[in-house]
Image (cartoon, rainbow, N blue to C red; front, side):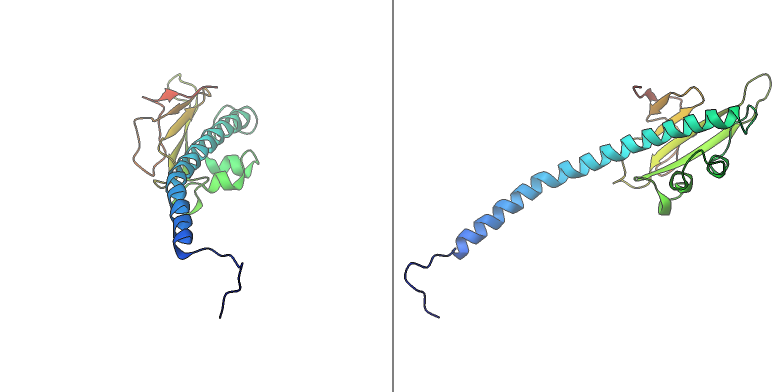
Length: 162
């Protein structure tokens, strides 16, 4: 095929330079995108723990008669959604996090209580663990629990701002 006079086009070198520039931009942008996703997952986990705390307060003052409920109790009474209630295993993780609630009965003059925890289900889910209790305070990086296991205590955690 013959080129007509005045017909313009891109050379192979020019196209390779453009592809290289796009590759460099992608290499810079992808880590930032992953960091943003982790931050969003962590914010979602904190919000979910606040929802659990509110649901536990409602459960305690209505259905529970002063005691707190497990995940299934909160869900069956319509206090938390099914997605959060199912986020107890990796297959059902909510925004990259697993959740657990550990209610405790009133004993020896101590009132009933609960601890709720959130842990990243995978390395891409987030980097911090969170926990909360009946006080309503959410803490980051509690010292108990292993990777993929929601914390069972707020001990050693740094409070998250309200």
